[in-house]
Amino acid sequence: MKFLALATTALLSTSVAARSAIFGASVGGDITLKDTSFAVPGDNPLHHCEDPKDDILTLESVDLSPNPPKATYRSGQTLSVSAKGILTSDIEDGAKIHLSVKYGLITIIRQTSDLCELVSKVDLECPLHKGKETNLNKDVELPKEIPPGKYTVEANVVDKDEKKITCLKATVEFKIGGKIVWHLE
Image (tube, rainbow, N blue to C red; front, side, top):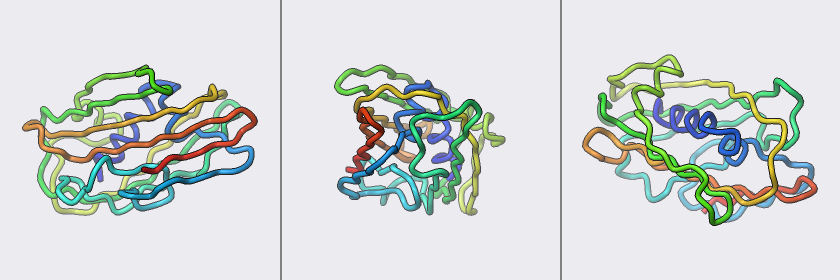
């Protein structure tokens, strides 16, 4: 679970656009959810990129509060992320997060980050050990404004041998007037 929290934190902290796109959705009105195959358990817009049966990280839940978030925030508003899960093997130095953020069809962020460096920002350190349930809570400050459009974020987390720890996706569409469509496919 430490990895989902890290992946979530990485997605939220990579850029204002990325944070807004995944979790900072404004809902002035309706929310339309589409397709829930491979949905991550809990109150969130995340789903696995593919069947997670062989993932090193078994996610038990990820909850966002507020969910849904609002598009326009007063300064200082936060999104709280709570997650829990279990690792099936130890994670050592060399693990990576491959992050991609698209605005419509245009890739606006594509980067690879060192997982162990990022976990230090959520009070964890490598190696991360298998077997016990881990709970993580993180608050993230959200931006004040989110440009309308469709954002797709993917975080593919792999160990030092490129074995999949987890892969998570979220697609959210912000419409003029505050309507949001979360695509969970």
